[in-house]
Amino acid sequence: MRPPFPPTSTGLSLKRRQLLALGAAAPFMAREVLAQPGAWPTRPVRIVVPFSAGGAADTSARAVGQRVSDILGQPLTIDNRTGGNAVVAANAVLGSPKDGYTFIWDAANQLTNPVLVKDLQIDYRTAFVPVTMAVRAPQALVVRHDFPAQTFDEFIAIARSKPGTVSCGTPPSGAMGHLAVALLQQRADIKLLHTPYRGGADAARDVMGGQIDSALITTSTARGTLASGKTRMLAVTSAARVQAYPDVPTIAERGFPGYDMDDWFGLFAAAGTPEAPIRRLEAAVAQAAHDPALAAALAPQGFVLVASSSQQFASWMNNQRELLQKLIRDAQITIG
Image (cartoon, rainbow, N blue to C red; front, top):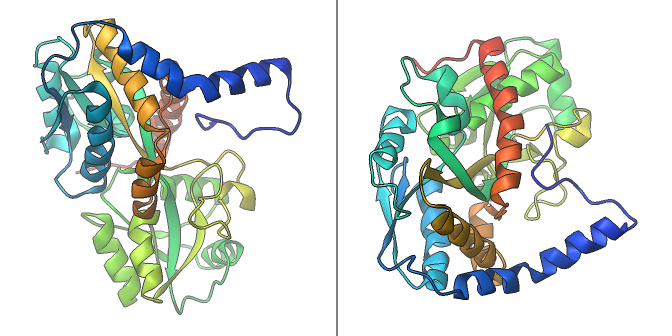
């Protein structure tokens, strides 16, 4: 699996120069697109968030949404619709008029629900149109302060020597933290004692308290545990190192090339939504992603702005879908 934006190489080909030139011009192109006369939006745009207020999804949606609202000149209202592993929110969007005034701020459940949710009535591939991956939320492997492993390599060695005894907490079963652990076990040929929690904060609490040996949680959640001095961060799940933790290696670079298991949030439209609102929203998020103030506001919370094109997002999702669904089946992951 490849990340949406693969690492750059050292020499610049003509094609690379052209792409970089386009990238540099993106904010100006976005402004030109948004400045074109048109009817959309003439009223508030609703963004349905399948997760509760105050969580990572809600926080990132509100931050990005405020900047996009400024760009579009209309309010973006956040509508939290929880339940059913995000199916309640998906149905709310699909049941709304396909007029470009309702979108969903969704996550990996677009890819995993088909194999996690029984009797699912939604075919996400045909029901939704990817607009843009807005942000990534890198995850990290942290251990309690007195755990004997000082490095990621030592953690793997201990886990191999004591199968099924090293405990690792993650947010809910079937979420990206759980899947990241499942892929690590598969790739490293180890067996951890997986402990699912209702949320990342609960896993963080127990790894700080020594009830569990380790946790795989977002860097945002891990930040507080590190500040307490009760945990150590051994590795991150991103394809590239996280700017906030430049000395922490990626799992990929420690012997597992291609490992890329960040959490993420993106915008989707219901199929049948007119093309013009989709393109204008995509352009608005791209423009917002160039705002240093927004990046600075999101960084302490562990978010990385992405603002991929809809084509990039769709292509990446196709690759990720195959990986995650196979992983769920192979690991026999269920959500009860």
